[in-house]
Structure formats: C-alpha cells, structure tokens
Length: 151
Image 1: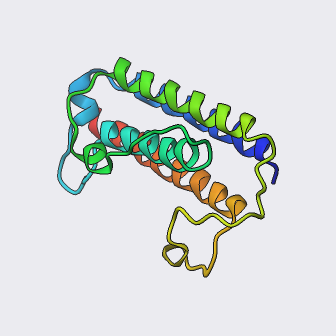
Image 2 (image 1 turned 30 degrees about the vertical axis):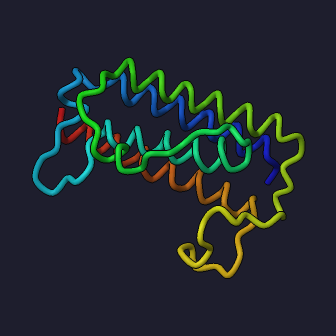
Image 3 (image 1 turned 180 degrees about the horizontal axis):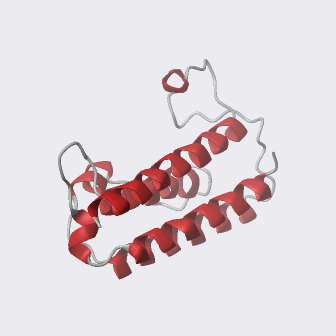
C-alpha cells in the first residue's frame, strides 16, 4: 500500500460520511438513541473526525489537534451543517498530512497507539493506516444503519 492510496480511500469514505449526514431529515434524528443503540449518528461522526484528526493529523502531521474523545460521545444537538464542516476539516487534515508528509515510511514503527490492543507486539504506520481505514468503514456502516433505523 502506498500512502496516496490510503489518502484516496480516506477521502472517498469521508465524502460518503457527508452524504450519510445529509440524509438525516433533521438535527434531532442525528442525535436520537433508542433501545439497544448506544451511539447516535452525530456521536459516531464526531468520533470518526476526532480519531482521524488525532491519529493522522496530530500524530503523523503535527497539526496540534487536541482530541476530546469524551466529547465525541457526549455531545448532542450539533447541526448537520456543523458536522459536515467538521468532516470537511477532517478531509483537509488527512489529505494534507498524507501529501505533505512527503514519503510516509509505511514500514516505520507507529508508537502512538498500544500495539497489544490490535493483537500485535509492534505496529507499523502502514498497518495502522489500514486499521484506521477499517475503523472508518465500520463506523460509517453503523451510521448508515442508525439512520435507517431512526428515520
């Protein structure tokens, strides 16, 4: 895998996230939780953005982003337009980091995440980028399902 391929996938999937957010009929639906659903579409959107802005933007790109993971899961009532702005900011951060990090050495060790949580002794940047793509896809699917259940 080359870094530009990862950037292309992140951009594609984050644009799908924007489309999902646009499909919610109103702000209330974005934040609704019902029986058996722990996270709203809005919280999952914030989580995706916080995760990528931290692990790619800050760790790989030194963006200075300070993550507030608790807020990703506790915030409520943020409008679709504001969420979309956050996704667009995330796209910008991810793409600029992947492009300006010149050549991201995908074999270099990635130490900003505990490797044992992914069943590894050591992580490479390439492996962790693949993990982040998978994580994004997982939560994007949850948002799609949440929207269809709630709406």
